[in-house]
Length: 372
Ligand code: ATP
Image (cartoon, rainbow, N blue to C red; front, side, top):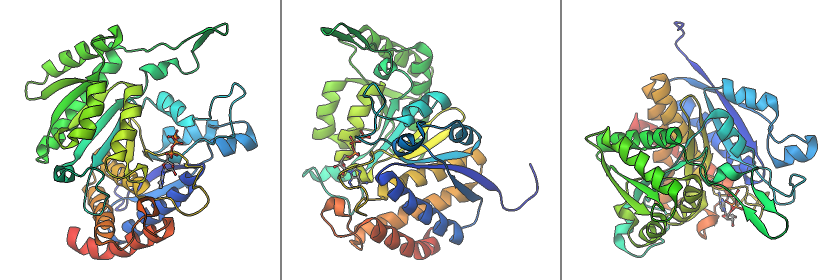
């Protein structure tokens, strides 16, 4: 380690397609403003090509140079990728984010769902204000293992296989247990729920068995189980009772959209794709072709993904000022939304992407004085 006072961290930026580009511009601006007023390492954010629109020009959705930059960077910021009209020859969509998960071993898809003032109250029960849980989606195997491996028997039968491995289940369970331990330190609920379909499928019974074995290694852990169909109901009827959920890839894909709906929509749902070496941070939403190019996208999911990146980098580098910077941005977003200064179009307001970005940027200096 050198003796320089300002550490520089490299961030590979993959804006991608559609509103991915729009919300990424917002996020880079907010990271820049927050860095200018706070101390700590500086982020060198470099953009790289990838995605469906790049594929249409070049025939390559994830160029080797982009993958190399992702491997070498300290963190990856990702917008959204995919476009309905641009597909592989076999008709499947261009989804390089799935390749990145496999290439970089990003096995834990972390999707925090938290209500705070200013967000729409989708559920009428007043306890919905207490929603604060994290969904951890296994994302290197499960039913997505079938991607590119599906089998068609003539024109009459089709098969996709789910893969559950001991190693894959152990590592994602260990990740969820560690997340729960951190929540306990923060005074938050820390029960870990295994979401499966162990009553029907051998693969899911195995997932539950390995989960239980892993939990048994942590005497302080509190854990239980739920079938995925029952969990869908719980998420709508009493989501404030949930703490940390861990589940298979496809179940996690579906439940995370339902979970985002509890706090108003995709525009508020951030995510982190975490592995042992790498971390990729992206909004849970897609490229939203219906609103792309119109400046209407809510950038908050992307901004909160940037917040998750700063928190992750703070732990990875041992630089607490990055966590302070994360709190500054998060508090600025909460202030803007709770004061009604900028109500995103996604919730029926008039604030487009630039309006929300400007309001958050303007709130940062005052928040800085409170938080730092
Ligand atoms: P994917 O399959 O890549 O997840 P999708 O087509 O299923 O994508 P999204 O692109 O996330 O889904 O869009 C779903 C809906 O949510 C669309 O109506 C879109 O306009 C809306 N939406 C998604 N993200 C945002 C956002 N940031 N701001 C406003 N609306 C959004």
